[in-house]
Length: 421
Ligand code: SF4
Ligand code: SF4
Ligand code: SF4
Image (cartoon, rainbow, N blue to C red; front, side, top):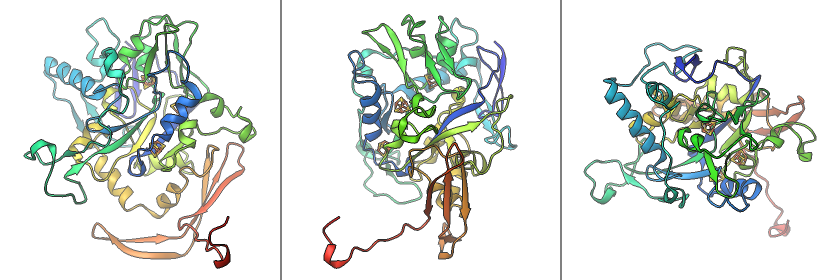
């Protein structure tokens, strides 16, 4: 298999195809700290794309409660177990080396096997399994079910209450769509070469004309985001709402738009856009792009299970209250730094974080106009200041799309109109 460079792992890895990168990449950030588990995103995707016969269990967007929940059930536990077994068989102890990091390896180097490398001596392109039908039946099994952090707590319930920085009784919501991976395992797995990554935006699609429903993509996508449709005998997956990304939705008059699941989010946890990609697959430096700034400059949003090796393009701001060993396994080795930066954000980061869910248009650039100091306090024992800066977001045509301040303005209704609009 050819070697390709995976910057999440800080090293080359083997993959089914030679390196070939899109000019732009569809990217999203989900801020777990803000999700209220309302499933509006889930319903919006279903109402738009998967309301037809044969798609009953297709939840291209789902929100599961960790640690017990998962769709299909236990998807990550199963693939992590497979990866563990492969490491044990090979006599390898997988580890992250964080002693050195740079632009090409911001999280250090992963010294373990990816799902592709772990399958290298077998007949498959990647480790994987085909979920049983019953595992697809309950998309939100274990919703809101907490667990105890303390190992000796009976019945998984801690009687000691909870306190920051890590709650002893905890759960969090994990929002999931297809990651439109840089190195998609689903595409590598497909014997029909029916899955492709679009050169203009990196969106991964299944050609319904070529697909014969062999379900190799369902088996080998480690995130289990390719799904089989019995009525058409083909597999289907999240299409990143590509008509909106292309700007063909009349609402935005030709500029790229965030997807349905992003645009409806009442928790304002989602930010979605396109980043520019260089020929070698690296992100073109662009610190005035909100996604680039949050992911690359501040490193507060991290990939989900980077050790799988697909270089997913959905990033998460990890929850502050969950036990760190659990989060390290899920988001890699720099979780502590990411949470520390998020809990006491820099002046610029606090302004950029305001851009989540303020417009349906994708934001390609932001500017900040400095405002007055409004708060001086301490966070985690260190001084921290808040400024009422104004952040301005610009759309794909360079036009101003949104303008807002860090401190939300308060509008007082006149007494005589207290209960009217
Ligand atoms: S998340 Fe799965 S289905 Fe989506 S691109 Fe990656 S490997 Fe393919
Ligand atoms: S991006 Fe579009 S197709 Fe994909 S999960 Fe969200 S709403 Fe569904
Ligand atoms: S719509 Fe937003 S807040 Fe609601 S569940 Fe989805 S991601 Fe969470």
